[in-house]
Amino acid sequence: MEEQNPVYLRLSYSESAESKKSILSLEISILSLIKIMRRYNGLRTEELRLKSDINNAMKILGNKIKGVQASFPFVKLPKKAKVEEIKKRTEDIEENLDADLESQLREIQGKLKLIQG
Image (cartoon, rainbow, N blue to C red; front, side, top):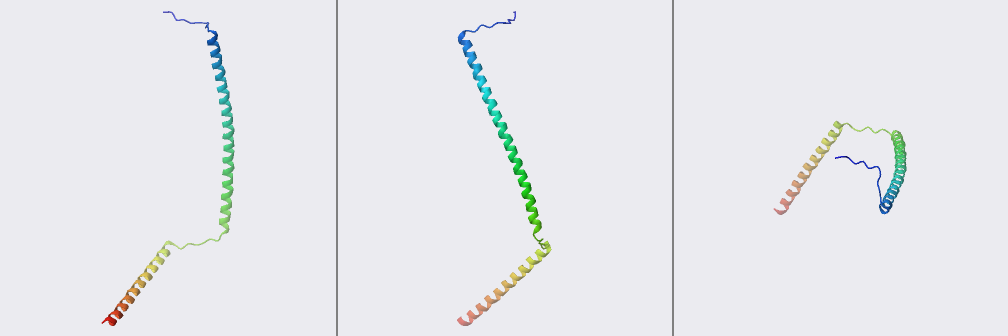
C-alpha cells in the first residue's frame, strides 16, 4: 500500500472559521500566561529583596545584642560541686527540722498524757 502524502488540505468555511477562532483563543491564553509569568517574576524579585532586607536587619540586631551583652558584668556561676554541697546542706537542715518537729511532737504528746492521766 502506498503512503499518501497530501500537500493540500481543503477546509470548508465553517472549519476555517473554527480553526481561526481556536488559534486566536490560544494566542489569548498564551498572552495571559506571559502576563502571569511576568507578574510572578516581579513578585519573586520583590520577595527575594525583602528576604535580603530581613536577613541584613537580623544581622544588625544580632550585633547589637552582642554589644549589649558585652556591656553587662560577667556573673561567675558556681561549679557543679558547689551546687551539690548546697543541696546537701539544705537536706541536712531539712532533716534537722524534721527531727526538731518530731521532738516537739513527742513533748506535746507527753504533756497531753500528763493532763489526761
